[in-house]
Length: 228
Ligand code: DX5
Ligand code: ZN
Image (cartoon, rainbow, N blue to C red; front, side, top):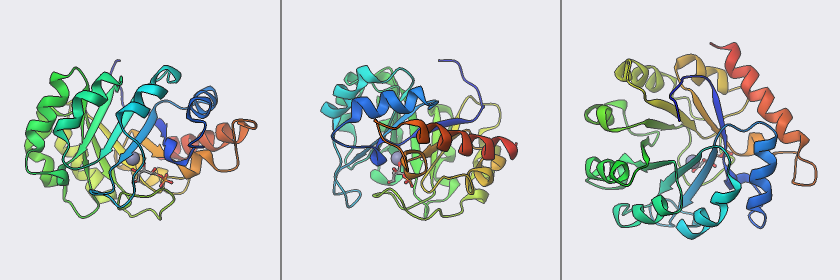
């Protein structure tokens, strides 16, 4: 996996058919998805519960691109090995999920995965200032985590601040929540390169009729690229 800052769109399977993840992943990749974003929720750190490492392992063979696992769970550390064994490429933990994010990131890298740190909308960029040499991705939440389909919260200033903080380091800036063709240019223009999108990718399509996934992906990519 070579590092680059080109725009990558990561559909969140939170917006896919939960009874049909394998086929949904194959369909959305065939329509042009760059990464697959996998939202793990525990009903404790966030209100909803989705699924865990066993589901990640089951869907892994269907992913040809990158498996981007977003852990909205607390505590985190005891579960990392399971997600690494499930085949995650990136594992992202929240800076708010516990007192030892530094240790969590060390653990993720020692398991052979790329390490990501996520910031809730209420958390400033400075919260990750000491972590710049131990992360491969910073995820800026543009909704309060827990549900798909929420309204975008403008975090453009935070993205700019992170972009400056990152400098030449090979660290992705990922945006998660409310990304669509209207909001994508704001964050792409500020320096984000990975755009997670759930509802804006999966709306209007299905495994039986996947063409709308491609139309939706193209619209987000075109809008983001126009801002560069
Ligand atoms: C929110 C999740 C997001 C979510 C994005 O808690 O982390 O990945 O699925 O969904 P949309 O694009 O619908 O806001
Ligand atoms: Zn997510």
